[in-house]
Length: 261
Image (cartoon, rainbow, N blue to C red; front, side, top):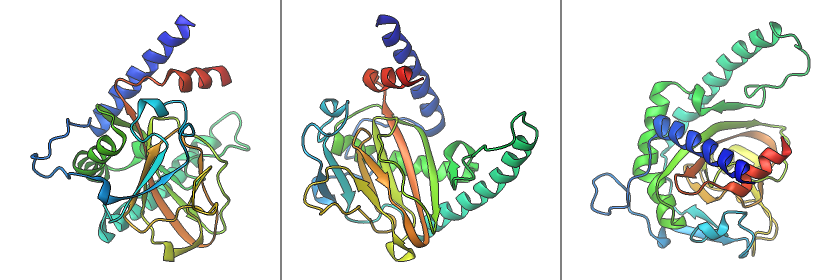
């Protein structure tokens, strides 16, 4: 058991340091700091899955069983368009590179890549996109998470821009491999039919997925069971960021992953 905990702590430290290097680290909340948005409860619509349903780290969070949706857009239309076009180009280039790797591999059949799934990983985005993202994190998203979920010393360790082109299939219901999840709508709900984020156990929403306006953000504990749902027409693009905290190792999640391996 002690060895498992040590491995979890080592992996966590490596992930956090890598994420901090790439995407910066949250600063202490200071409402007087220039360009840093100050968030409060009135900026959000809140949804509950019920206490005890926020996943293994719920008790480490403030409001760990609550999903928060911004009432106003955090990204304007031009920035949403920029990230969509950047993702399209990243996926296009990725398909070319992936195809070359597959053709040169020992087992070229049956391999599915991130590009095939319509995913542009953050690590593959160009520098200008990463610069925009890091500024957004510093000025808006890290302060949002700190204020709503009560965790300090945050860093993104992974993420992607995901494009669903109809007809698409729904994801399996899952937990994300992180502490906190940010889901930013890059497409308008008018751009597709169906879609949205299904939240297991969501109270007072008639079992319907949450389908947010363009540029708006959903943030929640990554342990809440959820899934992206299928679209029957159009295209849906989302920016998803996975966030961890320096002082929350998430031993339960990491030990479970190690057990599965």
